[in-house]
Length: 128
Image (cartoon, rainbow, N blue to C red; front, side, top):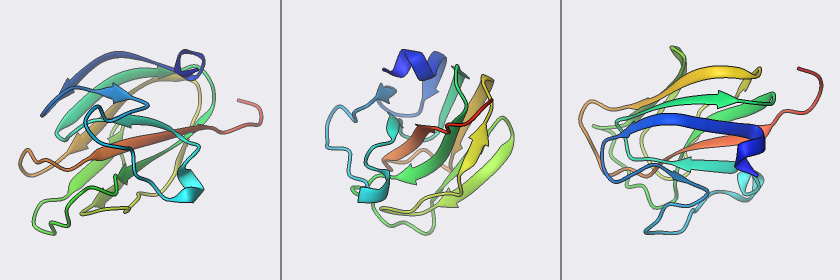
């Protein structure tokens, strides 16, 4: 399923490893309105080089298991365009619509942390 929508070429993850569709050690815990979105899970700081094969909607999201730490949040950027900055469980950035192409996704923080940061992806529909 994911290969039809996107390909991850390379990634660098601050802790653990990049996961697609799972977290590897805990359940993906998101609100119902985004439960059907595809998920890339990675602790920040993370950098992902990827190609979207279809027009998509993306947003940054903090898994429900993320602790609230206002002194150390996670910033989400897609090819240098900011999506937003998040501090704890169930927070989300704005959505961005991306045309097919290659992108760099960065999830950054003032210091490496244990936050369960997610990139949510959904096909946008319509013509590209």
